[in-house]
Length: 227
Image 1 (cartoon, rainbow, N blue to C red):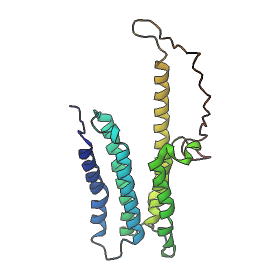
Image 2: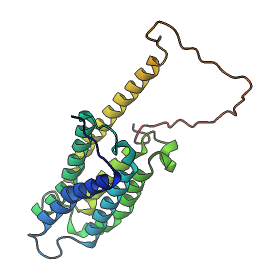
Image 3: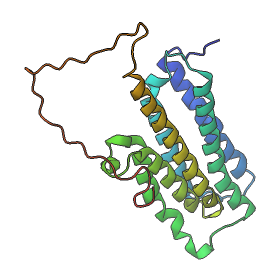
Image 4: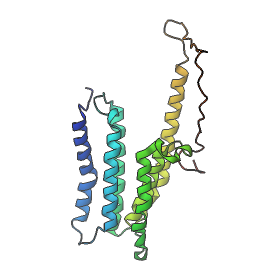
């Protein structure tokens, strides 16, 4: 049975439900038993920014999910990414509750200072290839996601979740390599003979002269001077 999301209203309600289940409910469950002041203003600012980014990015991807057949592979990939990011966010707050791998109290200012690069990384996720970094890196959304995962734990005053970043980068590189290889294979398939054995010939019209378009190819995939 093929799954379809019928309309935008249903899709918006689904985004709100995912936001509540993946962010709001876990934060309340972890912070509620603690004393007043367990969550500081920087925490609330970070959660609001993340919720805002999740909703806007979800709406930007609406055409890929609304009124189109959703394959099992696509659903599993989307749910897998959603669950992993939710667990990553909650791991930082759990570290604070358990007082595990915390930064020294004298560095409390990092919790507020990290809001600035976190905001920049979330903007990078929203803009994607429309951002200024698109001429430097091929996948600015991946860079924004990696940066947000680096700075969010600092808002929570813990460093333990940062140990997951090398593994995240490896998975990103694997996905990029797989996507580009499949894209190249499809490009070769376009040059293959048709089913009846005839070849498709491309005809160029000399009467139409197009001005050359200068395309700047990014030198790096995700992180400048690294990958």
